[in-house]
Image (cartoon, rainbow, N blue to C red; front, side, top):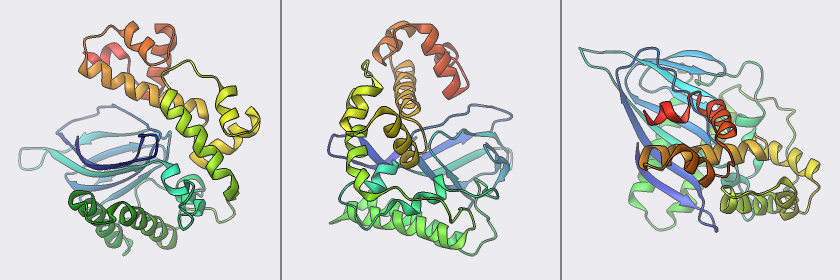
Amino acid sequence: METIGSLKNKVGSTVCKMFTSSANKRSNEFKVHKHAELEISLILEGQGLYNTNTGIYDIMPGDIFLFSTNEFHCITDIFAKDGAGHMELLNLHFQPSFVWSAGNDYLKNDYLRIFFGRNKDFTNRLDRGNAAIGKLSSLLLSIKTEFENKELDYEAEIKSQILQLMIAIHRHFPVTEESSAAVPNQLFERIESAINYIDLNYCSHISLTEIAQKAFMSKAYFCTVFKSMNGLTPWEYINIKRINKASELLKTTDSSILSIATQCGYNNTANFNKIFKQITNTTPKKLRD
């Protein structure tokens, strides 16, 4: 993975990033993953198969894939071409809060329906025969240029172009249920405060009660609103953050699995291993090996 650029919020958490990822020929490898960010990916090179929640898709250069939070996906196969197999993707990840955070009055959460208000005909691979695919590709490449050049007000321009991306998808691709309800705007800042608290403390032994208090809500109401705005429950969000951190430590340190589990907020390896397998479809030991 090669990071092109990232944007952080006021507590220093990454809320938007763009990166390229590449891989060589593979066959029937199920290294599934999911994350707490939304994802829009452009296939730059290569052919293969993508296994997703909505089906298995063949991959071609120019294809665009759309993934919500907490949604499994995995490129299982990369086909050889002229004796060599290679794939390269341009990935845009951003938190839902990057769209609806307080102060972004022109970035309403309505556009998140392409992630959270999908209809029964939704497919993770956008229709490659749709003429608007070219517009989406151009916007993704333009966002890449903004991250690379960092010209004046590039952060605002990136937000603006992400909005254009979501509008174009909503306008040109029949992927949403129009009846899906929007969250009242007055709740944005309260949920954002709770997310900021989680991002600063997710490796600690935090409770749902104290998180909900940061949003001035009851636990039940907070969980309902949080999921409607982020596409996953507070504990799903926390566990994905923890397991992503644990995966990084497993790959970059020699610390024991118990030590890493403890560092990431788990008090025993049994619970850690169970949640790790749920999110990554593998075990900490296999990932390290």
